[in-house]
Image 1 (tube, rainbow, N blue to C red):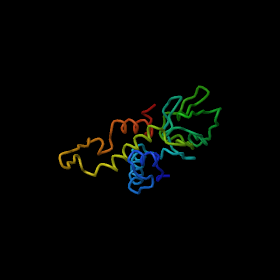
Image 2 (spheres, rainbow, N blue to C red):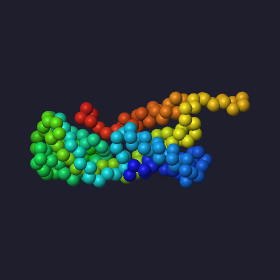
Image 3 (cartoon, helix red, strand yellow):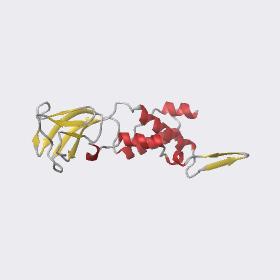
Length: 183
């Protein structure tokens, strides 16, 4: 799971004019994929049955930490198993909603939720920023901000060298694990 690419090696190879099985290219892509996963706090790819302990929020709805949600296998409220369609419902957006005019208690660690989540294939925005980061890692020597050969020079932007472009930052924010503050 942790060693799957979040973008297609063939796309990076075409962009760089290399073979798709070039070890340096694959390493750059794997590193960018790992970095993205680390910054968003989850695997991005499908996970079946992860069990999480959640805090109640005193509201009708709460957010599961990772979306898209593909299934909810179980919800326990203070040790009592709830029934889907009677006690709660859920959406692909990761919303867990109490039914019957009830709310989740405003209590810490009161919910245990078993659910499945993740994307079958990397969304385009993730693939794009991972490709960008892998390209920068492949082409910009570590620690180099500018390079001159003969009468020509090139200066690399600090964002390109560090991997923290605006597109990267926005994509990480969009796909990061959600907290109760995100409700």
